[in-house]
Length: 305
Image 1 (cartoon, rainbow, N blue to C red):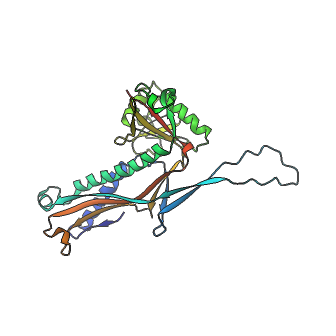
Image 2 (image 1 turned 90 degrees about the vertical axis):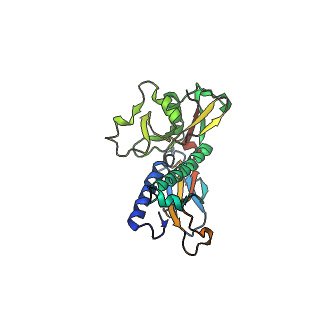
Image 3 (image 1 turned 180 degrees about the vertical axis):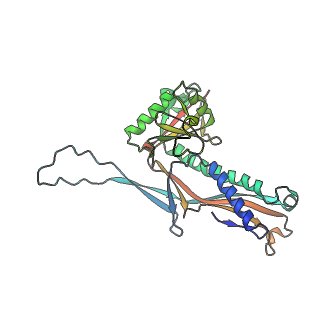
């Protein structure tokens, strides 16, 4: 992560603000967890191509002695993602900067970092919503048929896992798929009998706990995206819940340094701020996200009570 600052902030303070920015923005990037990550080299264009090969047909015919079989042909598809820039900034008046207890912009940095994290998280969430295979809760056939009573349940989770397994989706290294839920649907799933296993019961033995992880059920570890529940208006509010395997989607950044904290104050040559009436605190990111295999992501659309 890079930063553009002025001499009024010491190197030690800038390091602290950068760390604050990074930690808080990462804490809000829930949906990107489990993505295939790819750094895109600078000056290499805006498009990134991912190759995906289809499994070969099983070879059940016995070989003939001393004879090679006919060769098989690899088939596959390419998926292209395009990087783009995103960002936001706020103005801080010279009066506020001169009188605020938060003299070194820590609180402003926290607000900006939260905005950066939630923005990138929303981009990933929207891509998952548009690229996944849809499963309507309650056995319904259309979005308009989903009612508030068609809640997320262990049965819906088992059905999604069945779909992923039939589509040969790849589980993560621990043997689990990964699920992303919101507060409303976590509430319903946790109430589904004794099948739910709370993260508190296994966090000390797990090699890694995901940010926001709340529990596991039927081969899926679930994490909660508290501020970014994707929903749609129908006869009832319908919520999206994403369950996926490895390499189902990707995130791309520019050379692995995609997010910048930028703090600027006016200098002698800045004619746009003639009386030095404000400073700015902002962020900028070069980013892309793309579904790689829709068959390896299930979006369980459900109601909530």
